[in-house]
Length: 352
Length: 149
Image (cartoon, rainbow over all chains, first blue to last red; front, side, top):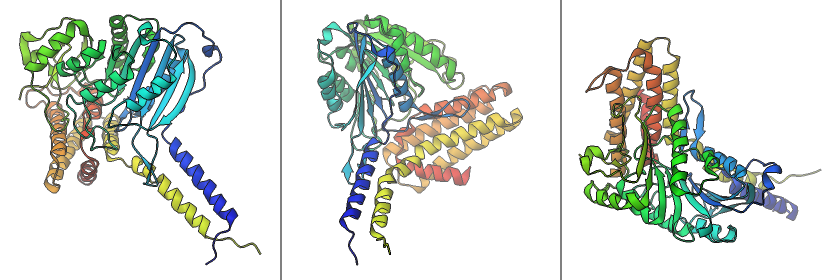
């Protein structure tokens, strides 16, 4: 058999290299080019926002005419649009993609960072997630690239987009690494890593079932205000482009409230399922979140069951404390909770 | 005479197939196929000419999906996680069936609201944690739905 000559081998090498590069680029969502006008701001920064978009699961949904949407990709596009228009913000957008191996052998980067400052894309790069220490890779990138100046001089917020984060860590959350447990304590630790001070001014959980007493009790020490859904949240999420509508707001409770109002209006226009959003001022709501968390059934199942949460008032009655909580609720047009016109803002597992 | 060695071509083909294999796998993700199946049902309901026809399609498809879940349980040794996921999904599907026909405490969905109800079925299915069913079980359910519905 005749062996290939040097030129042939070199050609094959170049081809393999290209395939490796293309493979590494796959699933990286491109940022549309911005205009020069958007990139001319020199105003001092007043916000630092971290947007975390989980993409390691099925995020397909359809609108009413049957058009397909990928929730994670769409959220990235919305976040890019907001970041382009926010001249006084620094925005880190992380896309957590599925773990993947080239040729089934070589691990490839499974995260993408998009870093904007004053409307301009500063960095776009892939990185390797460290799922054993959630958000540690993202925190390292944030430390490397963020603008000089302490967090205390800026309004800081983190937004998490994904499926419901289990109250207690359990496997199955990451489709490509189903063995790894993940839950609210892991997310909270990750958020702590991301913040230089260990505390954000605001946290948004754009997920199902974020507004539970246990979740809020866990998050409360690490943020001043939370926006979350105490039940199901349609995969079209809290639109990330709405960040631009609160670009000048630096008061945590006002920021979450305005974002909730805008998101609620959009969600109620496009879905027939229930829309419930709530904001929680943690200095007031944190303590009674802890008290209620001790009274409700702990979510100890080994798997998220997809069970619908109910208003905690149906479980705890008048022991539900809504101090520091504001809720926006439109019941589902159909289904078992279609007649529920109000919501306390707290979601609990129904009593068995 | 210019001779070409077949080796680089074969090598390139193998590398290309291996490199694109995960993409092909992603395209056949059974979770997404299940969502597409529900989308197709909903579009079929909306295209149906009469309320009776819309109701009949929903009835047939919802029953078929429940039947597929039941059959999957019988055929496979499911993990507790998959069992929980299937139970939750079946509960949600049964609720839809009950409401469609006005059973178990529900008022029947009025004829003029069947398209909206179909949207609700799809949105509720997509936001339910079908994520919790493993790829293997989801694939089995998908196959059974194709066979039974």
